[in-house]
Length: 117
Image (cartoon, rainbow, N blue to C red; front, side):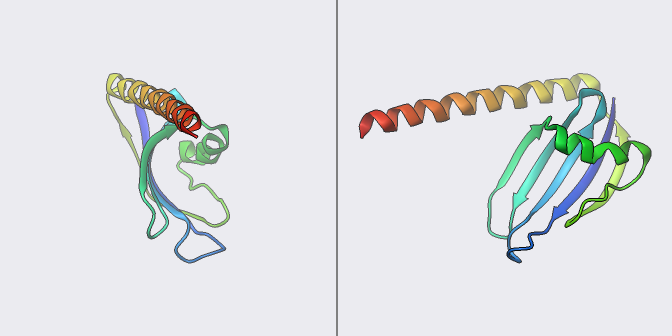
């Protein structure tokens, strides 16, 4: 399965320590981006996936070997490679299950906290 690795740095116009640095893999056949993102200089990191259309549209130039042109965003390390499609689909499925489980935990915790008031 075709996959495209990239690094994406988004600078914040508000503060030098804000913004994010992302290492990700765009999987065009699955219309998904798998990524690990560092939030700002002092923030935590997130590993997840997105199928958000806005980001998928931003990834389109990568399909033609071009670098996306987005204000305040720098791309580097772009590399196309082939990856085991079964493993990619399993990873995406696990990421979706994790998102669903996290949502259930958060809503359950919210309900518990609300009841405790």
